[in-house]
Length: 177
Ligand SMILES: CC(C)(COP(=O)(O)OP(=O)(O)OC[C@H]1O[C@@H](n2cnc3c(N)ncnc32)[C@H](O)[C@@H]1OP(=O)(O)O)[C@@H](O)C(=O)NCCC(=O)NCCS
Image (cartoon, rainbow, N blue to C red; front, side):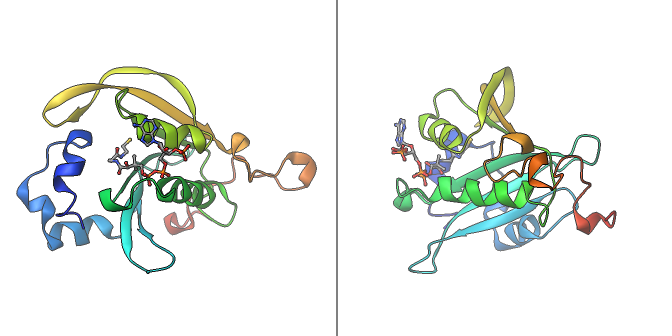
């Protein structure tokens, strides 16, 4: 799938060495790590892998934030899969049974209208403009910064709901909870 989408993804991604497109490299990237979680986006009906989502740069307290990145197979665009995947990732990030993070951030190029739509549909708010933020295809590209914190997540339970979800700790895999 990655090979099939190499041309499609090129305008939105950093320059990649050929080794990036090998099974070995991808297996390493897919492995669960201390600072990131990678997820496949699976189509319900067919069970086919149709995309990828990643929470990266997971940062310990007092930050408890992570960066969100994703892509969907070109042939499966426009079916709501990215939006569904982001909703699932936010639940994983904020839910007390998940990573218990406080803030999820995404950076998107101003020309990437589809991804901007996905982020805004998903409840992330535009926070600011970062000049020359990421290297994309060999150029330092400006990005909009979007974010959502646990308080804003629709699944959040307010203090009146009896559960305090803020400042709760760090992923269990860090052995801190
Ligand atoms: C961005 C991307 C993940 C979207 O995936 P997707 O599964 O098609 O997204 P969804 O179907 O959930 O939502 C797409 C939304 O964008 C809208 N859209 C499509 N083309 C658009 C355009 N040219 N301008 C504005 N909105 C557009 C769709 O109508 C839809 O919104 P709607 O539900 O209100 O109709 C996919 O195009 C992709 O992988 N792009 C390349 C990699 C990338 O940009 N990754 C993100 C980097 S920040």
